[in-house]
Amino acid sequence: MPVLLILPFLLTSLPAADLFRVSREETAPFPGDWAPLRGKKVKIISVQKLGDAAKEGGPTDKLEYTKFLLEKNYAELVKTQELAGMVVIFDSADGGMIAATVPILQQWRAGTLTDSALWHKCFFDPPETFDSSGSSANRSKRLSCSSGLKSEGTLPRHQRLP
Image (cartoon, rainbow, N blue to C red; front, side):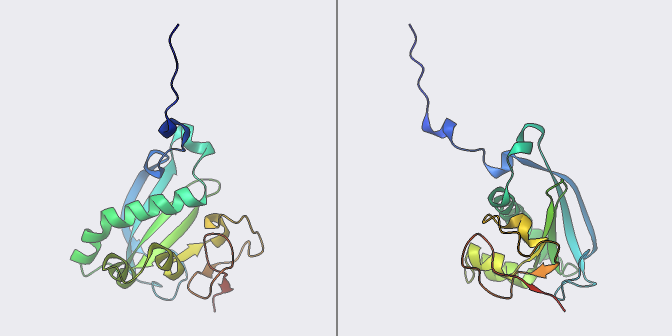
């Protein structure tokens, strides 16, 4: 009788790169109202969940996939002087948008910002989509993550933008 071995790596969740796919890339004016990118040209990457991965792809997975895209596109962003930043849009019912400026990405890639510090300087809309604590205190607000620290969860406490 064959013995079935269950390897530990089979029990872990899928890597974020296996949960999402890039559906569209474009260069356009920033689609939000965040002062550092308002009216500036950015690279916009639209992302969709893969079919069977629709049940996965929570806040942590979205941040991991965004980090992957930021790393992958960094050289292109700094090579061209015309782009002020990058935006990742998750095109799904629980979607959301993450944006970062080129100077923030340069600090991160140079090692002067940790991954956590990077997220604190990015723009999230809506922020609760990327918050693993499950808090809904700030639902329906368009906010910046660079305005304070949160005691629990993935992202900092948010304040309304002017």
